[in-house]
Length: 147
Image (cartoon, rainbow, N blue to C red):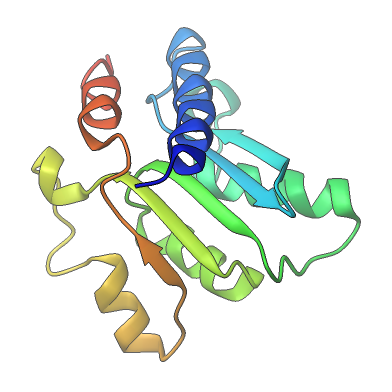
């Protein structure tokens, strides 16, 4: 695990903590392109009454708006918890090249049947480079603070 991964995951954790203060599930994501944060997201489902406002989708939307394009080729997405199938699909079709995870769903004893990022990639034939275990304990502890 490189120092760069840790610093970026800490930024995603900060988004998760802000989300918790806003009454949402504490999940955070950031999108990096050319070493710069171009999108930040946190779970906004409760505060915005929008079931699609998951941290990863919010970060991708912000990055696309910031860059004025809908393709994030070369991008890296950091997320505090393994993304759900909806978010994973958004990552796969956005052009993100690397996905960096904190906690895995299994670490949190959260299961969607046999779902994992790897199973969705296998099912769809699309893939990203996957980096796991970055600040996983801190990410899991933050998620467990949910109300």
